[in-house]
Image 1 (cartoon, rainbow, N blue to C red):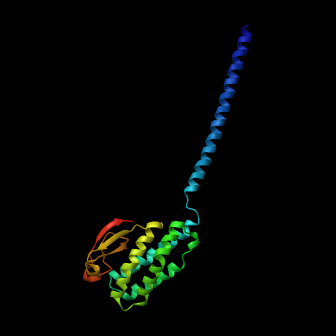
Image 2 (image 1 turned 180 degrees about the horizontal axis):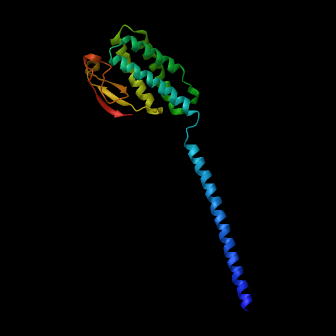
Length: 197
């Protein structure tokens, strides 16, 4: 009886030990499954390749726009002309086939106009006031564009209440410090930030 009881206890201990070992392996394999699932989730967070060219193309347009804005704030019509032409070039490089439906709608609405405004700025290197008129229209187009296209840039929408016979006009800036592209040195700090984009 004593031997039978010992054998039963040993058998029970062996069964319990085997069950614990199996459970440990299950937990280990579950952990491995979890690890690979986490890797997949992380990979899903990476932007698809198709999104990268669009956002970088939009960023290139914005960069040239900001250069143009700074040239106008510095009363430099020759530089403004150069950056106007650069915007036309960057718009021409956009691959519309990569756009979402919403992006395509906005593109159709504003891009022809943005290109036309940029052409006017590029073709008038000797006429600062004419460049500024078209910059006001271009700024509205770019504001619409940024609403649906992603950009990595930190931007601010700034408003000048004095421009266009006090009707006012917006522009986009990469910094909070006011440098007015509509008046340049005449009223460089005229304007206020309306919102962050």
